[in-house]
Amino acid sequence: MKIYLFHFFLINLLVHKISFSQQFKDSNINNLKQKVDSLINFGIKKKAFPGAQVYIFKRDSIHINKSYGYHTYDSITPVTNDHLFDLASLTKILASTITLMKLHELYDLDLNEPVSKWIPLLKRSNKKKHSLKKILSHNAGWIPYISHQNLIFNKKGNFRHNTLSFNKSNSFPGLVSDSLFVHRRYQKKIFKRIKKTKLLEGDEMVYSGMFYFFIPELVKQLSGKSLIEFLNYYFYKPMNLKRISYLPLKKFSRKEIVPTERDSLFRKRLVHGWVHDEAASLMGGVSGNAGLFANSESIAPLLQMLLQKGSYNGKQYLKPKTINTFVQRTFPKSSNPRGLGFDKPSLEDEQNRYPSDLVSNETFGHTGFTGTMTWVDPINNFFVILLTNRVYPNRNQKGLYTLNIRPQLLDYVVKY
Image 1 (spheres, one colour):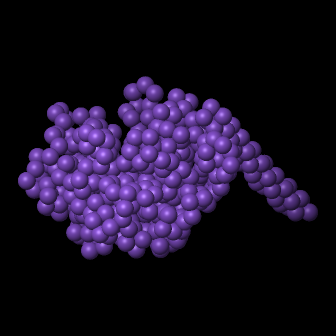
Image 2 (cartoon, rainbow, N blue to C red; image 1 turned 180 degrees about the vertical axis):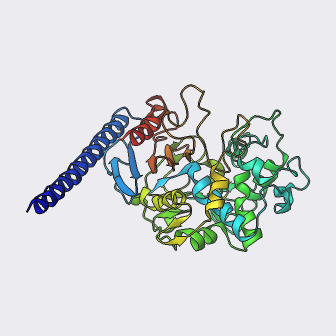
Image 3 (cartoon, helix red, strand yellow; image 1 turned 180 degrees about the horizontal axis):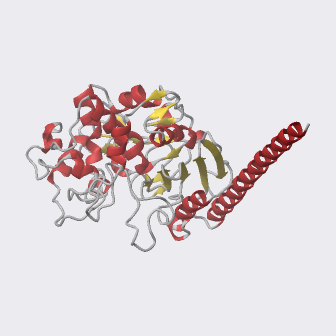
């Protein structure tokens, strides 16, 4: 009888302990949800962005998958979980970098070889000896950007010859926006401009998106597939990612896509369903630096795969060794914190540590100009997705930065 009572006592104690533990966990999650709701709604109230999606995955569970606000400040179209945002530079990791990781595995792509080996245009340039390792860690001295959109107008304010046209034809097949078409050879002009750019002096890290314009060509050279075909074949289709795409208007209605900026300088209209980045738009909307659109639910499996050392739903998409090579600091003994394609935290001794004071040194991710962020923390076992259209109605909206929305969001997730 005494043994029975003792077992009964232990079972009750265990049940209460589990119940208390679950209550504590639920309380923490509810607290996180309240903080995130307050932060994002505060950002909307202060007009840092009209709408957002937040997705938080921690300890093998989805804790938040929620949409906030509206497409624009007129409060007509509410953001829902299936709506797509312009990812801007998140394209660099969610398209370009994972592609390079797979090419590295499939074709023994040597990260120390000069990229001119695969991109002949660079063989007779000041960039002919630059390796993927130097370029992807932004340590090669390439200038940050070329404002190609400023080079398409003549003195009278009209489009230069063989640049853009309001009429589609064999010579102008690529859509830049509604009723605006780019010349079929304009991509070659972009490549030649990049080839001719001077290199920055010194050995400091300078963020540059220039090489990413060559990614589609590199993919074609090695695999025979277009960038879109490669991504669909190795990642998007087998992972069942239904709402991630270049050129989203080919697949989705405009009402499913969150608009970005009212462009008063280049396209002279609201950019809605077309890539916001001007240079990527002149590439026909498909580029390695920008052009990808998605909702957070279609991004999450890619980040979960990276968090889980390349595995997702029982299938190995990338090798753990490959992921480790790309997400670690490329030059750990230097002041350059970057990985290969991935952004990393700034050094610990720096004030206002990027992207947050609390994330671990092993974290990696990226941010985007339109107000987007994806971040993975393998030590604290989480990833965060924040999608916004902070550039609406124009890119002068700086509230996302001044209100520290992204650092606070990351800190909340680490704490709970």
